[in-house]
Image 1 (cartoon, helix red, strand yellow):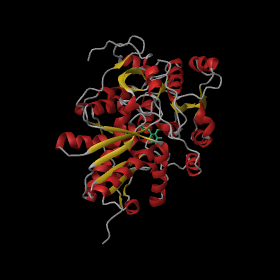
Image 2 (cartoon, rainbow, N blue to C red):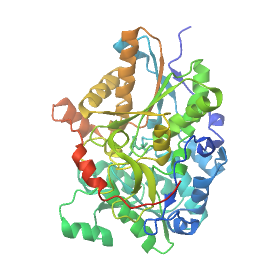
Image 3 (cartoon, protein in one colour):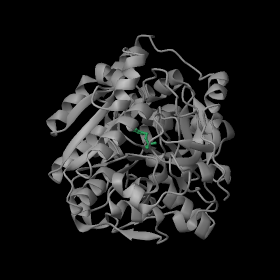
Image 4 (cartoon, rainbow, N blue to C red):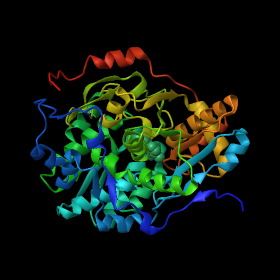
Length: 457
Ligand SMILES: Cc1ncc(COP(=O)(O)O)c(C=O)c1O
């Protein structure tokens, strides 16, 4: 009998609880500080922005938190997602390695982002608010939240980074199809947006600016709207843990266990969701696995950013957290992996990196697309440019196995498909892509503007 290629679970295998890494953290991810007082935030401050249940999850020390039934019911639309053995890619690479990928692109919106969007929308509905404000870079997060809001009959106000709004009309159209209202950021709708436009009417925007606008709009609504963030925060990482929890079961079916667990990192949510359940196996059962987070050289947060306190947004309205940062004023170069262009990184990922549990590598976009195309030709799936970073490092690992003659098990998270990112593929295929390394001088410059925090841990 031939060996399986796909490991598919049934509805009843959708996890009943998320894995919360808080009680297992070897180093504290640090406090969340008020942007003005620089003191630890109170639940009252956070409750202006986030639903209470979400805030409770952020501080919870319970290892497993039950997934509400209405959320699990919606997960059934696309979960469990398949774990696929990339046998054809293994053949092309002629490697003894076994390559597996968890495929989150099967969600209706084409990425992992819906895993948390549905949970957050459910919490907002429970609190009886009118809707959410949010930001989106490349559009993946805005798309997910638009659909989740529609499912719970909530309004969705999306501030979309100007450059993506202009370059990616299809994402805007999907969001509008799901019923969202999409505004290019910076905009005239907020004080902060106006101030940016007054200085630079041609501003291309950034995720940090769009976050500021969305936060300002939520605060100004006086309780009618909450603000939703699609990455970085603890509860978001936790909602994504369904990815790794399912993958653990699927590896049992395959009778294998990963030696290396790879994923791309923007704010850190898809990687956390995939990797943390495997990290738990390492902490609890001594499993010997290597963890690799992959980022673009154009936005090298973990590999070059300082590990310090910084604001989550450009206007200094969002809380201050301890994270690797390129500075909150970071305006990213126009690389194609839009979802990897955030100036900061999830504090949990940073703490695990500092503790030596997660390695980080930064790669260029041309080799990234080279591997994405190789993957597409072998496996048929066109990866999202963000996810392609994980593909690249998986390929490099597989080639190392070939060189060394070792049969390691490589697992990576394919966080989304790239069917709405074809312009990026077009640029690669027609030699119009350029590599770009974010210069150290710019990072040093931005560090002059960090908040002065004397918080003692
Ligand atoms: C497909 C895809 N993968 C990865 C990311 C990066 O985000 P995170 O690190 O939170 O998973 C994004 C962000 O937009 C994305 O759209």
